[in-house]
Length: 336
Image (cartoon, rainbow, N blue to C red):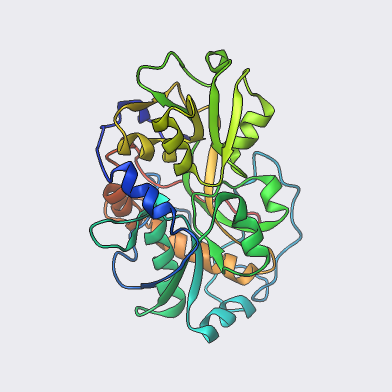
């Protein structure tokens, strides 16, 4: 399921790139955030979620994992509000530490008007914190570069990562994921005046930028189309290189590319998305009770998939202007 309608993006001139670059310089800071504002606004794909069957396993337990394939990679453990060791640990420390981006417009960025983190992923993180810790939940947002998301989870420097993170089998060998909360795909971003047409041989001899550790980097490793690949820590750095003439194109998730096109009307998406990718909330592989709890939050967040569901309200707030035509959240799939 791809996010369609990207080619008719409205060129919304949002925070200027210079201001966003300044935000990137602060990207290593722990940011305490109040749990109340904008919490509970969520993600969707226009149809009702199936009834939830609570698992028959003790809190924190999981069934034997099926072999991961491209077809079933986005499946996760069934939702449950039962509390095991992971949820108890979060409650005892009285705060949820979430790895996020603070440079990606619409998803996780510092609003220049308020100085606070905002975006689709930020709303979702606050909704999870509120469910676990209550309406006055304390959330600590920790800016994590793309290639440090998995190490941060494995070292337990964060409780979870909510950062446009694609679910795939290679990553699931190292960390656990929730069900999908958004569908995207890799796409090319380039200047409107460029002769680049898509992810094809029009990239030959061009400098193509992507974030280290991203699925965009994986796509370019598999097929460069004759391009010179440049890697950077965060995706916003690619937009800056594009604006400075240090790169000819960017390969990134269609959702992030749409946000970058909204920041700079001189660039546009080229061709259609050439992969199908699901975003999930990532957690430590041992935290199975937390995975189930997050899936319960996502189930509530999707609601019935209608226009008043939390997911659809968040979509209208953050994404609809640049990614029109999405009718609701992706339906969840379960492995047990």
